[in-house]
Image (cartoon, rainbow, N blue to C red; front, top):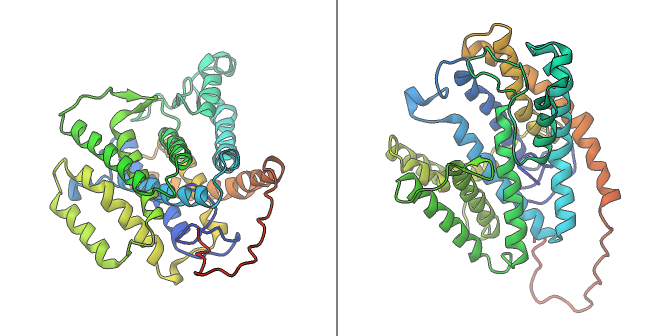
Length: 377
C-alpha cells in the first residue's frame, strides 16, 4: 500500500474495495486536494504558499510530509505481511505506474499539442517531447517541461511539478526492501536508528554544519533527506504500533511544538516527528461519520497527479488569482483522479494474478498455541 494504495485499517490490514474501515483514505484524499490548494499561490505568482505570510506554514510541504509518513507506515505493513521482493515490487509498481503512464501519454499526446507555441510538426519532432515520456517513466531523472508548453505562465514551462515526489516514494520502497531483508521486522530498533541518522544529517545540513550536494539522484538533497527520515518514522510507527498511543492530546502537544518552533529553522526538524504523529493519529481516530468510501478515496493518487497540469491550464486560460485557479482546477482534478482510478489504475491491479506466483498455504499447526496470535502481523 502506498500513500495512494488500497484502503487498509490503521494497522495496515487490507480491506475490500468500496467500504472504508478507517480514516486513512479520507485523509489521503484531503491531503491531495490541499496540495492543489497550496500550489495556487505560486502558480499565479502571488506567493510561495497559501498560508506562510500569515501563519508561517508551508501547507504543501506539510501535506507531502503527511503523505510520506502514511506511506512508510502502510508500506512497512505490506512488507511484513508478505516479505517477498518480487511480490512486493509487483504490487507497488502496479499501483503507481499505470496511472503515471497514462498521465504522461495524455500530457504528451493531448495537452502538449494543444498548448504548445510550436507547430504540431515541430512539437512532435522535438526530442524533449519524447524524453518527457521516457525519463518520467524511468522516474530517474524526472522531466517537468514539454517544448513550448506554458512558457508565459508565472511558473514557466512546468507541465507537472508534482512529479518530483515520485522518486522519493520509490526510494522509500527500496528502503523498506533493504531494511526488510536485513530483518528489521524482528529487529525493529534498526529502523529507528536509520531515522535518527537521516534526521541528524538533515539537521546538520540545515544548520550548515555539513555541506551536502544540492542534487542527489536528481532530487533536491535537503527535501530528499527530510522526507526519507519522515518515511522511516512512518515505518517505525508501524513496527512499534503496539507501543504507540495515538490520542488527540498527543496531536495538541505536536501542534504546541509547531507553535513554539514557529519561525525557527528547527521547525523543519521537529516536523520529522510531529507531522507523522498528527497524520497517523488523524487517520486512526477520525470519526467514522467522516470516512469516505474507498471507491472515492482511491482517487487520491490521480488527484495528486492531475492537480498541477490542471492548475497550469487554468492559469493559461486566464485565471490570475489563487482562488480562481482553485475554483477551476479542484473539480477537474477530482474528476480526472476518479476516472484514473476506476478506468486505469483499478483495472491494472487485475494483472497481479498473472504476475504474482501463487502462495502456498502454510501447513496448519496441530499443536495448540500457547498464546493468542496477532492476526495483524
